Length: 146
Figure 1 (cartoon, rainbow, N blue to C red):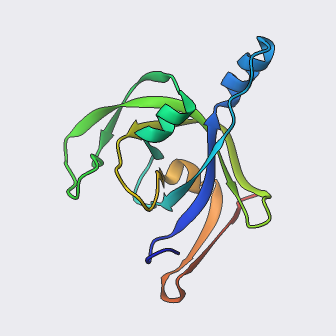
Figure 2: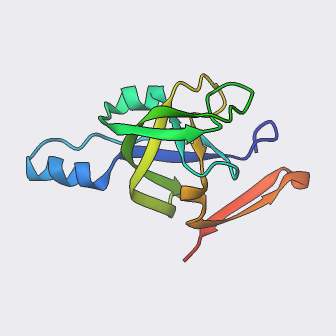
């Protein structure tokens, strides 16, 4: 944990479908990037900073209506529309072995403006693993659900 927040390194990249298209066309496959993610058990979907979208040159897949997250400190009950992107997401353990790898995941891109993390990992990802939070000890574990 960092400053009491459950943060984990994740790798974000283009979706497997996009990678396959690049390989068929003999185009280079864009490399993944590693960023910090906050485990957010209150979020149903994963949200990434708009800077990740820019760095990976992701193409949007339309809009996604999101309720409650707008980057501010208050929860707005009205839903808003944000651009949606197809990505791959990997959570490696300390040795680099995949705990979770999702090849085709939809994620919303928003300007988060946070220095500590660039991704909020929602239940769409967290439901695919077992997370044990020990806030009193300042520790957590993530293991594969399989």
